Length: 416
Image (cartoon, rainbow, N blue to C red; front, side, top):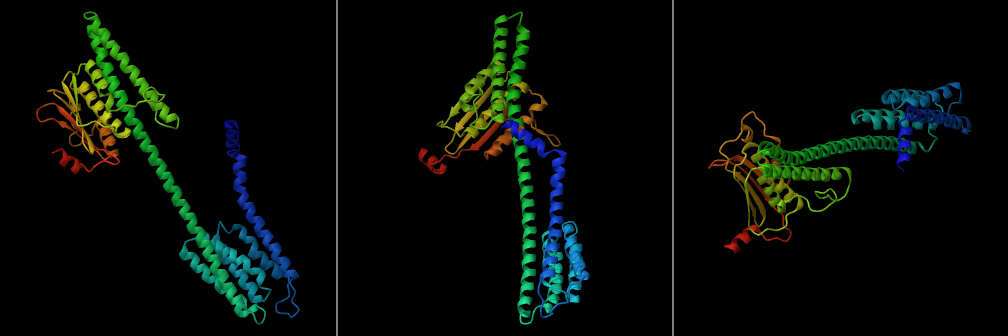
C-alpha cells in the first residue's frame, strides 16, 4: 500500500503531469469555443425562414459568429474585455438583422464569466450592458412573441449574473475557509511545539540538575567516602533511567496515535502528585531536604491537572537544586472542594540572581514560563517570588471541575 502511494505521488509531481494538468483547462476552453461556433453555424444554416423574418445568411454572419464564440477561449484571462468584444459583435449581428437566437449563448456565457471573476460593482454594470444588447435583439423576434422574448432575455441575464456572482462568493468563502484552516493548523503546530518544549525542559532540566549535583558529590568524595560516592552514582543512574523513560514516553506520543503511554513508554501510570514522595527522595539525594505534606481529603485529579501540579513542583525543586543547594524545602499540597493548591518554599538565604523573578526589561526563565503556561491551560495561576521570611516560594492554584460535586460555599459552610 505504501509503495503504491509513493508511486502515485511521484507520478502526480512529475513535470509532464504538471504541464498536462495546466494544459487541460486551456484545451477545454478551446474545445468549448470551437464546438459552440460549430453548433451555432449549423443552426444558422439549417434554421427555416419561409417568411423572411431575418436577413439571408452570408459570410459576414459566419464571421460575426466566429468573433462572438472563438474569443471565449480567453474569457477567464480577460473577462471584461471578452464581454465587451462579444457584446459589440452581438450588437452588430442584431443590427444587421441575422437570425438572433444563435448569438445569445455566447454573450450569456461571457456575462457569467465576468460575474464569477470580477467584483460585484463591475459585474452589475456589465449585466446592465448585456441586457441592453439582448433587448435590442428582441426586435427580431417572430410576430406575437415579442413580449415573451423580452421576458426570456431579461431572465437569462439575471440568471447568468446570479449564478456567476454566487460562484464568485463561493470561491471567496472557500478561500477564506482554506486560510482559516491553514491558520488553525499553524496555531496547532505552534501549540504542539510549545508543549513539546515545555515537556523537554521539565524532564531534562530536573534530571540533569540531579545528575550534575550527584556527579559532583561522587567526584568529591570518591576517594575519602566510597559508600557516599556509590550512593551518588546510584542516584545518577536512577535519574538517567527515569529521564530516558520519560523521553521514551514523549517519543511514543509523538510517533503514534492512541492513549498517552506511561513513563515506561508502553502505557501505565503517568507522572502526578501521587509520585511526590519519589520526587522528594530523588531531590533529597541531591542534597536538598524536602518535606512533603498533604492536607485536605485527597481525590483523583484529572490527568492534565495532576501532571500540571507535579511539573510545577518538579520545576520548583529543580530551581532549588540549582540556585539554593541544600536549603531545606517544604512542599504543601492542599485538596480543596473545588481546587488544588500547591506551595513550594525553600529556606535558602543566598541564591543566584537567576532564581529571582525577572525585573524590568528582563524575561523569565523557561521554567517559570512553562509553569505559567501549564497553569493557564487549566485556568490556574502561578506566583513565584521571594518569601517574606526569607527564601523563595512558588505557589500554584488550579480549579478542579468535579462532576456531580457540591458547590464550594456549601461545602465550607457544612465543615464549619
